[in-house]
Length: 129
Image (cartoon, rainbow, N blue to C red; front, side):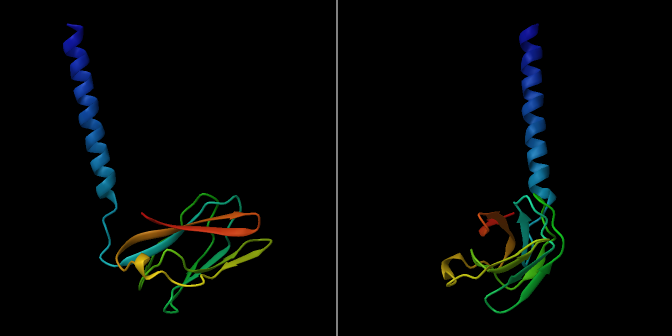
């Protein structure tokens, strides 16, 4: 009697986890355009963030708390690196790429720049959301 109940519990658990996983994947549909945002992966509040694309399009994001995501904004395209200015309460930080790697260019999807500050240096990594 215990084996059929255990089997039933295992089957229900697997089915529920599949349903939950599928719901999470479909909760945020893939955009038809390119959207970019940032994740503040530091311990300080970002009061203002500016991302400027290679074409000169500037995106401005307001206050983003530590470990939080900004809103996402429609953009023309995105590379693995971008010109970024971060303003905090006590200091401003800036990063400008030496070149844009054409093999990393994206023009559709939802991407964010994971930004942290270590030793007064911005560390930036682009991820697909």
